[in-house]
Length: 391
Image (cartoon, rainbow, N blue to C red; front, side):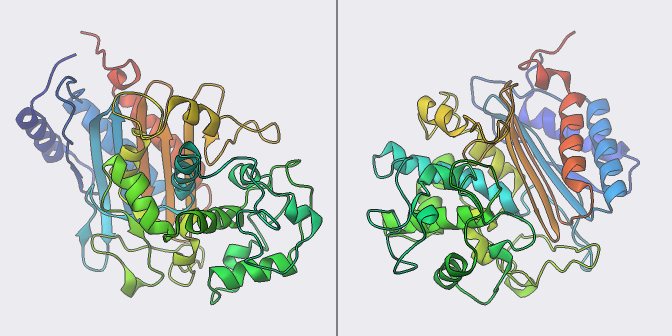
């Protein structure tokens, strides 16, 4: 493996940009690596191959803007941006543009919950509703027997017994209601279909409840607590909750483009805070991934035992743990999807982390984004061999 200086890396990128024949412009900015670890250099041919892969993905799914970030063992090895943040203004995407990350929010909320568990302020088997429950009687004078059986664990691993994603998802109903009104309405009008802990049913509403638990336990707003106790400790400072309208777009946030008659600006994204409400750059999410896995390089904000508990799946679904998709290869990830947004963030067993965001959504994009990110990861063989490049 060849150690690359910052100047040489920038020169390499400039050359690759100049020779690219693809119509979608892109920009790459290497981040600062740890002093004791060299950046794994991508060759000119590899940079061109990455551009070609990105272009094919964008053409296939009619993607206006696409941004990616990769890091290996604590070092950022590639940041790339392709296409447009705002087509009307001819504004090109940069690696620092923010995107709505949708359900890629869930690992962040899970880490926030587990940070409170580490401090002894929460327990996984704690009941959520009713006498002695974390939320007590905040949302009703009485609850059904099934609702009273819901524990913190059930919310984390989507085994609460109901309120699933899809038609009837509470988080996409009654858009003018605030959190308290929506939770009260849901508990009154959507009884649980199954006993808690028995079946998996992906629930955005369950993660909305987790946000309210964080607020109840800490006495702080969900975003304020997460910014200080999770993101800030990971070195992430630009993330924030999304606005609902185009006029509420944050500085350096992309414009979202709906397909199939979808309107990205007629949904209450801000109310989705703890299950899908953040905006971030891919680099922000990679930084987060590198700081929560219980390892020592870089310093994790969670203990190794906490990471193991958080990423151990339930018998109800061996592919999902507490806010993380998991597999037997010890890869951990989550994807996100909203009108105008498709995202994914992955931490592999080889300590290669990546995130990829697009400012549109259409059929097949979830799997398409997953595939394109894996394809890019294979372009530079050293990324998959812990930094070793064959001579």
